[in-house]
Length: 179
Ligand code: ATP
Ligand code: MG
Image (cartoon, rainbow, N blue to C red; front, side, top):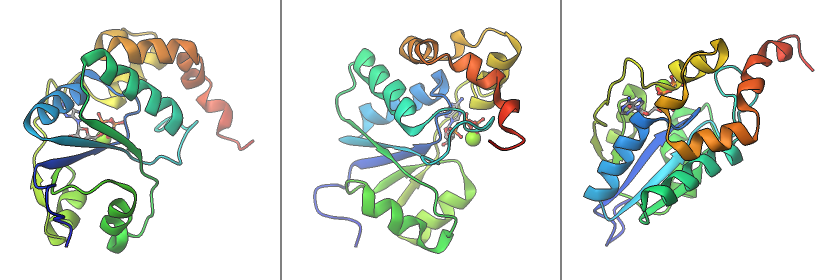
């Protein structure tokens, strides 16, 4: 049912992008070259201002759109996707807010399982230099004064500077007791 004619070579990539880093960008480059259209789902869109999810969906959207522009990638669409916490309807939820697609790139076992059951072609996203290139490592370096800039595309660093992202991450403990 999902395979609307003409979308056989359109793919979805989903991540939280907290923040978008060079490992994500390598996958986006590869998929945008291989596929007709790439839909980039910004996961946990409702979350921000936590140590795991410091940036809002809007801020992450801007990091992504500025990077795509910088890269000259013009066949990507960005869709913020909120969590549902009800796995049986997760695929329908994603389908209801994204343009049609037939392929999904993910290494997450739960995501792979759900989209396989729904009849999608599920592909592995190749990992690029995963030891350093993870959102967790970028946030860790932002918190402890390490070199996080070398792990993210330049437009991402510009957005983070403009919103004082480092200051936000360092103040994350301030939210722990509630507002
Ligand atoms: P976090 O550490 O915050 O979980 P993350 O780096 O795992 O961040 P996510 O925003 O959770 O990134 O997005 C997960 C998606 O990004 C997965 O599909 C994963 O395979 C892909 N991904 C993450 N790191 C890399 C990398 N270094 N190279 C290629 N793909 C990556
Ligand atoms: Mg992750």
